[in-house]
Image 1 (spheres, one colour):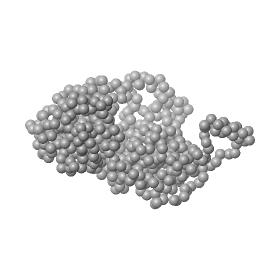
Image 2 (cartoon, rainbow, N blue to C red):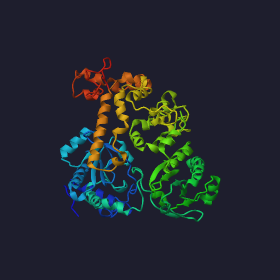
Image 3 (cartoon, rainbow, N blue to C red):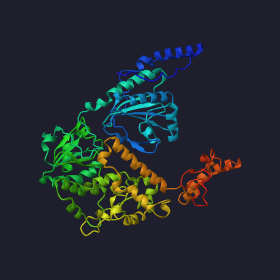
Amino acid sequence: MKGITGTQPPRRGIAPPRAQALVLCGALLLAGCGGTEGPASVIGPNQGLSHPMVGQKAPDFAAQDPAGPWLPLTSLKDKPVALLFFRPGAAFATDLARELGHYRDDPSYRPIVFLGIARESTDRIQEFIKVHGLTLPILRDPGPIARSYDIGDVPTVVLIDVDGVIRFRMDGYPGGQFRARLQATVDALRKLPTFTAERVGSLNLDYTTHPKAPIFSARAIDGRPLDLASLKGRVVVLNFFDQECPHCQKDLPLLVPVLKEFRSRGVVAIGISSRDADGTMRQYMREHGIDYPVVIDPTRSIFNQYDSTRTPDTLFIDRDGFIRFREQGDRSDRAELTRLQLRLLLGEDARTLAASLPKDRYAGDAACRACHEREYDDWLTTPHSIAWDSLEKGEKWRDPECVGCHVTGKDRPGGFADSEKTPHRVNVQCEVCHGPGGGHPAGATAASNDPAVMKKVCITCHTGKFVLNFDPDEALVLVAHRDDPDMDKLFKYSDAQRRRLEAINTRRLDKFKSGVAYVGADSCRDCHQEEYDQWSRTAHAGAFAIILKTSRGRDPICTPCHTTGQGHKGGFGDAAAPQGNPMTNV
């Protein structure tokens, strides 16, 4: 094994005799009451391998390269990843970053991707890299990444295998244990590329387009043997459920009749539950009309193979054994949606099915996705797909003036009624821009992709007091379906695809920056009077007056922290900004 490179972290000075005595007494007391046992026993053979996060899926994130582009963790799919979480200036952070940089430069560690994740500004990160001569790429964490991994203030190394599973985590590399902990990290790094071979049949379905369905054999609760491999050539529906799950109790009465309806066409349904609660599963099946086989999976081995963590979870497998659709949770249009999905899997013509949709009735994004997966995946990368979130965090979701532009088809047939009855119609879905049914139903006006027509749709919501800066030409670029790489390739790591993704993200970010200007506190006051009044009583509201009193109102050293938006469009000092709102104060 290659030795550990780099310099030994600096040791602390020798304590004076009295302090040494106190430390010795403290150590003896701790040893007597089951306290620390000394450095040799702290670093055991499984150090870093027994952390509670080991074995879990690594939380997804997007971190910013100091040069500008954002890098999503998912773009590194199929690559083992070593992450160093730290704050520049933290004890031993520099030494650790230097060590990981050495490993990155060592060809024997390939194909591991080494990255630093720092909670600091991009300027500070660039300065940190330059001052210490680091070769480790370091990305900026705006804050949520460290929280999602529950990272504290000490440098932490997390190793993730090619399937996105955390295999090692070490929190803290204190001076006395730096070398031992670093050696444990190196040992784990050497094994990281081989971890995937130890998996047992599980499959990451999250970022794989139409993955092959994992094969399993089991025995149904009535004793019937089941073998998924023997069902190739038939459409199969797997429904993961639980007897006491309230969402299952709402979804099954809509799903089960459709599965019975399509049985005569060769569709096979299999229910999978992790338990037979109080021995009442057969009674539960009778009450819900479930006459297809149900497997009890007490070890959750089948659940794990399909990465199923919540119920209901329904998967549709085509005749070639590939998973074509996956539906999680309950929804009021379950029956209609399931019929559409099964008819497509049975080979019915998509155009004919689309033409049979009810005219002037909203079908929902799931119906659109059944045929337009590429466009649906593009939509997921736009703000439209999370429009409801901006209301849900406050009280605006109760305001009818706001709700209409954050949902689909409000108070229209098939559209949004309220967040309890129709949660699957929240967000700005396909039919907001393309009309009910996407213009497919017989007799409906065909959807137009003419930019002039689309702009008129945009300004029905992006208008008046609800927008401060809005350019339809720039907005259309941000939601254009053909502006993203193919999503099935996006998550397969390669340098060419990564460069393309970065170029697209940079272009979108530049367009966004060019179109949005600082507008000043007075513009915010129109809608946020209460917040404005609160701000006006703070020191921020008088920040500019402080430097004016000392005749430093134009001092470039002072103005960045005593004004708003300096150096940006509409910000302090922008000669082209509208008059009357000088962007002074903070």
